[in-house]
Length: 107
Image (cartoon, rainbow, N blue to C red; front, side, top):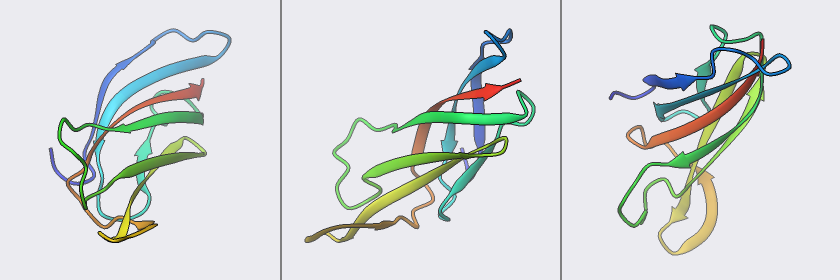
């Protein structure tokens, strides 16, 4: 996978009271946020859950991810520590972090 690439693993297809569930993977693109366009599945992204896909200790790379919804887009933010000793979180510019997501969209 390359920076910014989104792969949809599944979607609920049918909606439950107008809501669909979308699952997938995105590689952070080094900007904050990395946008995931979900307009093919609904008109409004309601929110999501994101998690770094890794089996190793996170170390000095991207150590946390968060997300927010805007229109039909789920925006994924990567965070890292300022320098290995300072615990202050800053925007991550790393473009290789693989993130799994679950999003809900309104049809």
